[in-house]
Image 1: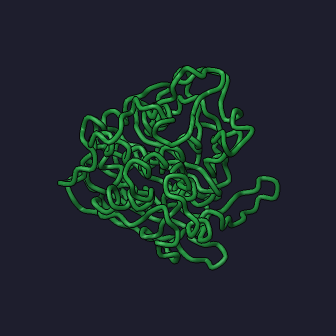
Image 2 (image 1 turned 90 degrees about the vertical axis):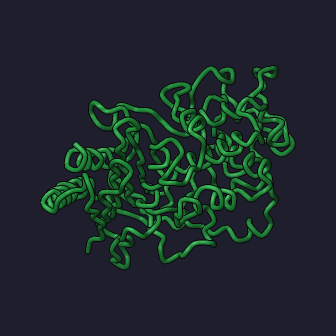
Length: 371
C-alpha cells in the first residue's frame, strides 16, 4: 500500500512521470533494503509531490503514510536556530553574547580561558566543544557538576575550527528557554510550528503515538533490523522533575523534533523564501540569510551549504541520523526547489556527508520532477 499526494498546479508532474518516479524509487529501496520512505518535493513554493513507500512498522506490517511522523534527528537543530533568530531580531539576545552569561554557569575552554565562547559559535559548531562527555544533560559541561568538565573542550581555540557537536545545540535550546521564559518545546510549537500550521513537536507525550514511525537499526553482521523504542521515550519522570532553564536536553533540541515529511517540506519552504511561508513570516529576511551564510566548512547557523548532493547544484539544508533513521532536507534558494526524504531504516551507514540511499532518492526526485 502506498500513500501519496499529487498536486496539479503549474509545474506539477503528470501521471506518467509519477509512475516512472515511483518505479525508480522502488528500485533504490530494494538496493538499500529500506524499511519505509517518505518524500516531498517543493517547486516554486508548492509541494508538487509527496509520497510514502514501504512500512511504518515491520512487526505489524503497517504501511507508511504521509501523515505519519518521524523523529527527524539533526534537522531539528535548524528549528532551534530559527528560534534564536526570532529572539535576536527582537533584541532579547545577541549572537555575540558570551554563552556564560546566557546559560547561567561558566563556559570557557580551559586552554583558552580569556576567549569568550559566543552564541554564534554554538550555532555554527565552531565553539571548540565536543561530545566526549555526552550531551544528554548540561551536567557534563557544568564545572559545579562534573569534575571532568574540561574534557568537553577540544585543543583548538573557540572560533578557529568547525567540529560538529550535539552539545552545542542542547545548550542553544537551554538559552532559548532562559531568554524567552518558555519551556523549549512549547516555545518552538508556539512560535514556529503553530504559525506554519504544522503538526509535530519535541514532547513525545503531547503527540499522537499512533502516528510515530518505528525506527529500525540495521545490523550488517546479521543483516537484520531491530526496532529502537528509545526514539520515542516519553521521559515522563524527567519532565515531572523538570528544572526550567537547565533540564532542556530532555527534549533534545539537537535532534528531537517529530514531524512528517510533508510538514518538514513546508518548514523547508519557509527557509527557501528567507523566513516566509505564504503570508506568514517566521523570521526576518536578514536573519534567515544569516542562517544560510557559511561560517566554516560550508556550515552556517544550523543550515549547511553543499554541492555534493545533486551534481551541479549548490543546496542548503541539513541531514539527520539516529536510531536507524536517516533524514534529508535540502533546497536551492535561487531556483526555488527543495527535497525532503526520510527513511526509518536502510542497510547503509552515513560515514559520508549524505546517506547513499537518501542521496540516490534525492537525485531520482530531482531528475524526474525538477530537472
